[in-house]
Length: 160
Image (cartoon, rainbow, N blue to C red; front, side):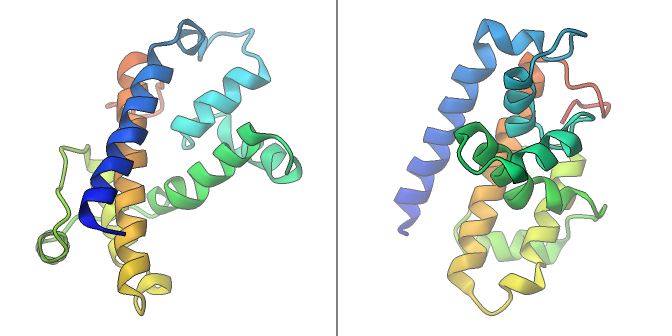
């Protein structure tokens, strides 16, 4: 994928996140009467949220529902990298620069997750897959931060 295509993909995902985060139903995300579709939305954008492990298990069993796929992808390409706390390093910053990937302003947890993507041994032998995974992760991290900016995520001080 060309660098321009990556930017278009990130912009498209970012605009989708902003649109969905602004919808009225999204603001209901932390109410006691929260419905499963609301939880699928929450866990698609903020898969590290408190109810999301159970929603992820439900999504694993439901292969037909597009919302289930969205939750599965959010965990696979984003949340799993947040599970192990890490520090973003100068080597990570150099790798991003060498690969012409712009580093957005992310919170500390997302920066640690970005380190984990860059250092993922499963991606070590495939430069293209690593670049794609990093771009995907950055897009999802931005979505999570935007979502939590418009909605009350609550698990962490910064909300994402």
